[in-house]
Image 1: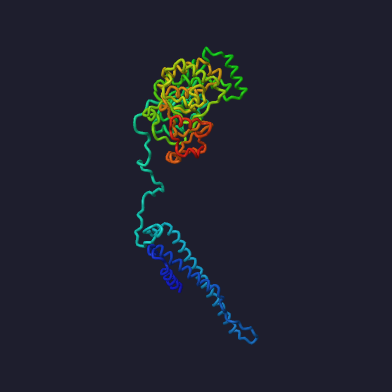
Image 2: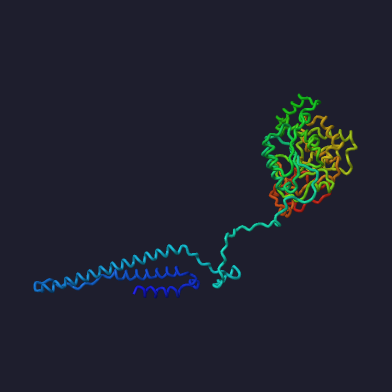
Length: 485
């Protein structure tokens, strides 16, 4: 009875199963048969166990019952009780046996490979099950979810073409190592990783091992480390030390930035007249000045040095502004003294209108911010510029006032270079605290992966001299500049 019930239940289960049930092997089929048999047996046991056995009603033992009859009834009751007990024990044994067989098949079925899932055809949005699709072949190694980039899709490691005889140059101290490291990363990531230009580091002291290790590891080109000669970083013999000290105290009381600093004055004098004459710099024709803690916000896809040479440019900038008047009260007087002494060094077609509103009588204080410069070293080494610097140096304004190298370079470029020899790099996004040059033109910023906020652009601010540069040179302002005013 139990086997018939099990076969009948299996047939019903088999007819209701999906088409891929035929893929199971013999052991899985036996497992299902055992499970159904166990379910059937459990049902029978439940029915039989839940129905109490009926015994014959006992007659009351009256005084007139025959003794032999009473004895016979007792024997029948005992026999039926024993038979019921044997059947109950037999059911328990069979149930336990089937349970053991079922557990055996469950444990052995874990080693059976699972069947392949049905494959689909057609568009992913309308998948159709294909029951006849062959199973996917097994592979020794599972495929990864990452798609590698073919080498053809990666940018070239370095740009093609010849390099210019150029270098980056930085004036820094050992304590500036992490600030200059930040600047190097910006320059390398945005430009020099493609061109691998050299980098010259200059210091008024010896560079320590940490500075050399950190910077040389970051620069893609060769790194060179030079010490500034003492005569280029000290008071010249013609400077009155007492007078210079008094000026520093007065500027300190007026809270003029760097007004009481001696080292800042040495730096401005050195950048104005000596860095390009250092023995390490004599190997190069072009320079790009980089200071600690500066940032570049856009990719630069072309060689800026080659651009300067091919377009006959000798000086360039990204930011321009008005100088702090109290730091240069007599600078223009010293410049006019130079031009009257060396009129041959003032070229025709210069940018005097950018410097002065009255044809040179007074100075409007506009200057290119020289912490960023790309320029020609041969021009700085020319007789015209050397005469210019020497004249200013003997005037004493680097120490008796606080002349900066920015107005010194700017005035020289505006007077001794033709207008077309000075270039504004609108496309080089640059930051030096506290000012930002962010290229005007949304499409350019998108194409060159710029990260600067155009609202921070200083160019069209009222304190900037860049708009004047456009006007003096007859240039159209970049499209969209009105939105940044």
